[in-house]
Image (cartoon, rainbow, N blue to C red; front, side, top):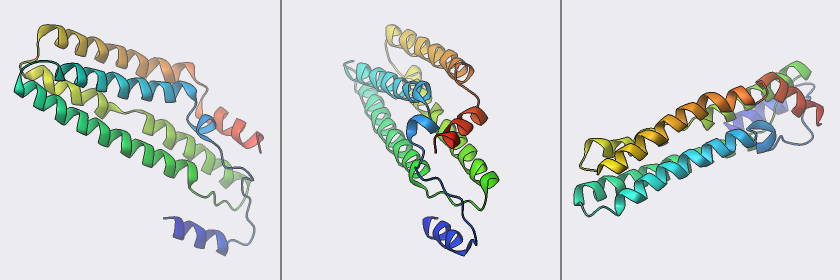
Length: 168
């Protein structure tokens, strides 16, 4: 992908490029980053709390859940890194703005780590105790509320892209 971007950039007659690559705060924003961190931390806390139960089946499912969460977190970091470090190739101001808008959309889409919500729910169907089931369902409700509140409280994508463009 990067080689193709570089070749396309070299072939352009005139190139408008961002002098500074937009950072994670400009593309993702602090509320979205906190939401992702809280989602992964909450799911990991649920899985770790299930490890304390003296049932092999629950412990095994909790271990598998933790491995899955680690994979989800690693994939998220790698994909976000790609969005942040991908070179900007634009022919004019319009295509430069379109690139920034797509980067903001990509970063925000990466933020919706719904897999992290689903993984701990595997333990609901096992022999996990009642307190754990209540905690898991309570966190699921909190995540769903936050999923709708975070985008409602953050500026629209076009505004964020304009601010990133003005920063250059």
